[in-house]
Structure formats: C-alpha cells, structure tokens
Length: 622
Ligand SMILES: Nc1ncnc2c1ncn2[C@@H]1O[C@H](COP(=O)(O)OP(=O)(O)OP(=O)(O)O)[C@@H](O)[C@H]1O
Image 1 (cartoon, rainbow, N blue to C red):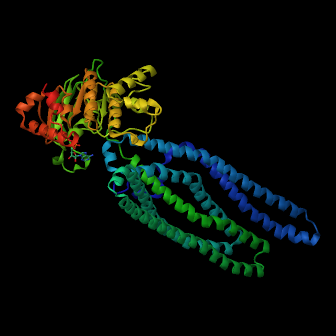
Image 2 (image 1 turned 180 degrees about the vertical axis):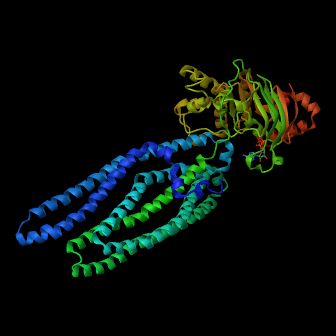
Image 3 (image 1 turned 30 degrees about the horizontal axis):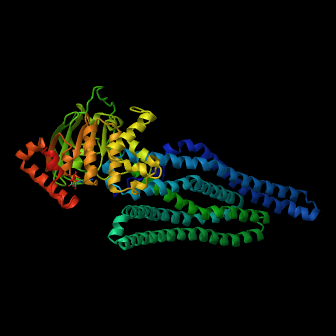
C-alpha cells in the first residue's frame, strides 16, 4: 500500500470534486432535495415573524378590542408554515434516497472493475482488507454523506446565513452582538477541520488493517488451528482493535470539543443578548414583538449551529473516504489493451516464443535482482514442453508472462509471431489458459467453476449443449468424477475458494477448468502435485491424449510430470540453459541431472515413501 495518500495534498473541496463524474446524473434530484430542505428551513424561519406580528398586533390590539380574527389567522398561518416544513422535509428524503444508492452502486462497480484490471503486481502490494474496506465501508460512508451530510452542511450554512441576516436586519445592535459570537466559532471550526482530517484518515486506515487481519486469519484458519496459534492471532487482533478504539475515542473527543464550543458560544452570546435586549425594550428602543422575533429566530439558528459540527465531521470523513477511493482508482492499470490491438492470424496454431525476456518484480528495486534474464525459449505449436529448475529459479514467473499476468520488463513474448502486448487481453486469454498449483475456485457451482473460461457470449461463445459436453469431457480428463457424488452433482455450490473440497479435488477442478477452455496454449503450473500416484497416472495418460495439438508448457516438480513432455527446458539462475529430450539432457546437462535427482529424492521422500521406482524411471526413460 502506498505510504503517501495521493489525495492528501488536495483541499477538501478539490478532493471531493473528483466525485463529479459519478454524481453528475444525481445532481438534479440532489439539488431538488436541497431546495426542498431550504424551503423547509425558510418555512421554519417564517414562523418567528408570524409570532412577532401576533405579539405586536392581534394579541396587543385583540385583547383590548376583543377581536380574535387576526389571532385566528395567525394560528392558521403558523400551522400552514409548520405543515409546509414537514412536507418539504419528506420530499427531501424521497428525492435524495434513490440517487444516493445509485451513486454508491456505480462507484462500487467502477472500483470492482478497476480492481479486476489492475495488474497482479498491484494486488501483491495491497492487502485485501484495505481494498475491502474501501469498496464497502468507505462507499457506505460516502452515500450517507451525499444524502444527508452534504445537504445538511449546505442547509446549515444557508440557515445560519439567512438567520443571522434576519437578526442583523431586524434587531440592529442585538443582531451584531449575536454575529460577533460567530468569530470564535470560525477559528474553532478551522482548527478542528485540520486536526479531525488527520484522525479521520488514520481511523479509516486502521479499520482497513483490522479488516485485513480478519480476512487473513479466516483465510488461514486451518494453519492457525493446526499450529495452535489461534491465541496469537487473537492477541494481534486485540492489539489492532485497541489501537482503532483509541483512535475512535480521540476522534470522538475532538468532535465532542467542537460540539461543546458550538453549543456554549451561542448560549453565552444569547445571555449577553438577553441583557441587552431587555435594556433595549425597557428603554423603548425595541418592541416586545421585536424581542420575541429575535429570540425565536436565534432558536431556529441555534439548531443548525450545533448541527454544523456533525455535518462538518461527516464531510471530513467523506473526504478521507474519497481520498482512499481514488488512491485505488487513480492507480493506472499497467497491463492495458493496445490502442489498435492486432488480431491473431486465422491459421494461428499456438507457437509461443520468448525472445531475450527479462523480468523483475516491481518491488525488486534493482535490475540486478531480475528473476529472469535473457530467456530465449521456443514452444513449437502443438508440442508439450516441461520446464524444470530448482526451487525459486523462476519457473512460475516465466509461466505467468505468457498469459500476461505480469508483463515482461525486457524482450518479448510472441504468440504466433505477435507480441502478446499487441493483442487485446480478452483475445489473448481466449487462446491461453492456465492451471496453477494452488488452485483458486469461486463460491459458485462446479459447473460455473469449470466453465469459467468458456464464454457464453461474445467472441468464441459456445452453445449450452457444447458447454455441457466440454465440461463433462474436461471433468473426465482431469479424473474429477467425484463431482457426480456431490449432493447436487455438477450443480453443487462449492464453498469459499473451494475449501469444502480436498487439495487434490480442487487441483483437478482447476485442471478441468483449463482444459474446458480449449485453448491453443495451455500453461500448467505443477497442476498434479496434490494427486495420489494412481490418479496422477490416470490424469497424465488422458492429458497426453487431449493435449495433442495444444501447445503446452508444464512446470514439473515431479519426474512423472516430465513424462508428459516432448521436450524439457532447464531454467537455471533465471536463464534457460538447456532444451532437449529427457534422455539427451540426462547425458549432456549436469545441472539437469542434479535437478532430476533432487526431484526424485523429493518424490520418494515426501510423496511416495518406500517407492523404489519412480514414474520418471518407468515412463520418461521408456
Ligand atoms: N509476487 C512476487 N513479488 C516479488 N518476488 C516474487 C514474487 N513471486 C515470486 N517472487 C520471487 O521470484 C523468484 C522466483 O519465484 P518463482 O515462484 O517464479 O520460482 P519457482 O521456480 O516457480 O519456484 P518453486 O519451484 O518453488 O515454485 C523467487 O525468488 C521469489 O521470491
């Protein structure tokens, strides 16, 4: 996560103005809501004037002349203003409710789409909890501010301005004394805004960190339980929750001090005004009606002055939410579609070539820390190449360059002589499918998971019957017949990330997903590592049949996976140092012999203890 918030140097107004594209369509109903609210305030401000008229006119005269008509009309007028205020408040609520939720929905969708577009390197850097809190909590906070806080702020400022204007115009000196009370309020509000902004941002960031800890510990619940580290997780969570609580208390304290100032200063000013008002009335420089008008108006203005504190803190919280939202939204996706994407030739067969490829992870810091350097590798169309190398040599990294999960930092990856960066990403992903060692499944049915790479609409779309056929074939090749024993067969919804399935079952579904996509190029990152030897052999046999015609790059951590391949490429210190048939490499490459013997040792000691003959001996040498 970047340490310097991108939006923090902007003023609150400039920061919030960035919402314009999202709120544009909601401006008319929001403005309608604001006008209704202003109308309601004016109705409230009109009532004191009727009271002044009643006191000085109908009441004073009516008592003397026993004429109650003016008084009756005044009561009707107060009632009418009161009803108008209630009606306009209800109208405001109706006008702002729907646009607010629409804006929240649009911003949430835009962020989710953007997150999908951002490169894997972005997701390596940003913790999930921070993103989750931005998508959920911050946008909820923004909606509440839009439909309530913003209107309240404008309304409060307008009511105070009009109210104070009326006071100065109708009560002269008395009004000016009341206005003088606003000076310390302005200074206090300014200082509050500066302090509150920092605390508000800190609190929202800490909420994100807390969400991240919850996400991590729920995700890793099995490991925590297995190692009995639940109490450590609780300890760390408690620490973070306490820190957040302290920040929230600090925030509430700053807020409360503002509220106290906004309550106390007008009350003190009113005390002074009361003494002055009584003196002015006593010396007949003011009528009793004027005094009633003055105090009734200050009663109407007093509420918004206190509410100003709440709407200000809501506005500052909203500003932090906007900053946090745009920190993500203003991160440009590095992996973008070219302006004029090249179409793959119609007779494209899936020849992949890596030419002088270099790659360094963004956080590597120095080019010398590149994971891959000067990599040249050809994957002829329709062949299967096994990529072997010691652990950490960069095999998975190399595999991720083909479907552009990461972009090369030097050189080129070509698919049928077209640089993969010149292809539209959806086109590339239609031709290249991947199965990872650590398979991620989604909370959806088995069917939806397996058919993830088979489009229902758009280019390459296939009909329902063909989708069904592909799914059954892929499940059969991946030896994933177990799905038919699930409660609803292929329509069974698998739990979050497929955690209700075993590791081997998940791997087979991920493999089925890659096969069902019928790609021209298949990248398999050790997709059979969790399978038992019998299932692995069955999958390997069927895979060899269906891979016919598909260009396949398979990362091999086991000798049996090498058996799948026509050729083997050896990755050593970030470079391809040898390519050839298994037997040829055994004879010519000392490093290959070393890698194979370490794979075999690993295979015998970890996977199949007691096994004297490895599948590599049986199948590769055959
Ligand atoms: N997301 C990442 N950010 C930074 N460095 C990474 C990232 N992923 C991998 N690396 C580093 O890149 C190097 C190569 O990792 P890679 O996973 O490609 O190796 P590998 O050959 O597939 O290893 P293994 O056989 O253990 O799976 C390692 O030093 C690793 O620390």
